Length: 358
Image 1 (cartoon, helix red, strand yellow):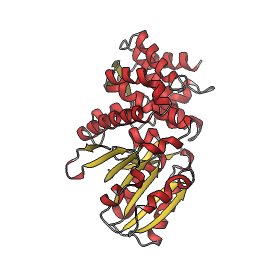
Image 2 (tube, rainbow, N blue to C red):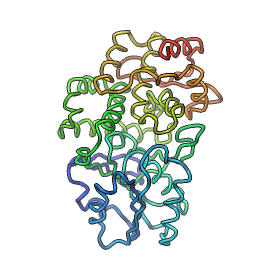
Image 3 (tube, rainbow, N blue to C red):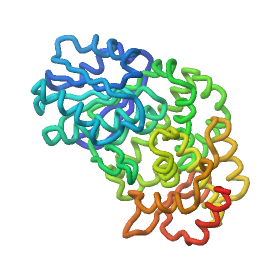
């Protein structure tokens, strides 16, 4: 087992990475009260819920099983979580456990942030995307029809337990989606990691345990370092949104669940690369390299069929990174060196989108 720490002073927490953690005593060891609400979905529950519950003997445990899918990541779904906690008369000493991918983690984190004005929660991510990215850092929330993750809160977990064994049951489409976030870390801050990903992409896609564990650890290490420096995204943490401005627009356009989040981010990173090239930052060879690694991970590298420039501009207008109505993009000065750019000429943006949408 490997353990990383997110250094946030008295709110610091561990990220445990290993095989078999679902069956260990790590979950019971971090819970500070007696009441535990385990929330999962109807895809994960048959696979792993009983194993998690077996480690919580002696606790007062309740469960909520939600429908699977990004389309259910909405404020109405939270009522199932709140109602179960209130019916069981769970107090401020209760702990919520998010057993699932990014959708479950985001919703349970937001429920924990707001239930009785804030209680503990633990992340047990079951997809590659949630293991390498969304389970770490305390961003929680739900979608709105006008934009992704528009309703939420910063609320850090008390621990993240990453059992690499659960990836054995992860559908390949979800594995590909998770690779988008792994590739993102190489592009935004570590060119050596990007080269390692390129060299090991076949092993990663084949779910080789040791290779995937290395990718998870390096991704989490980068995320933890950035969150420790900028918890609430006032500066450097914005770089983690590489590909997300375009990606969130794609998700909103298709209707949440049309493409997986990672698929939209994959196409979004290619768009960010092409805009970076148009801004004079990246060379054509760099863009070609980014397209190639995304294609090898079976990620989309173009926008969805039928999505127009106006569709992109409409959805990006409500992006959370915008300030005073100005679009802000995470671009790349070079491979492994991302930046936030607020001065993107509209005609240049339109040219890039026109070329990619045609």
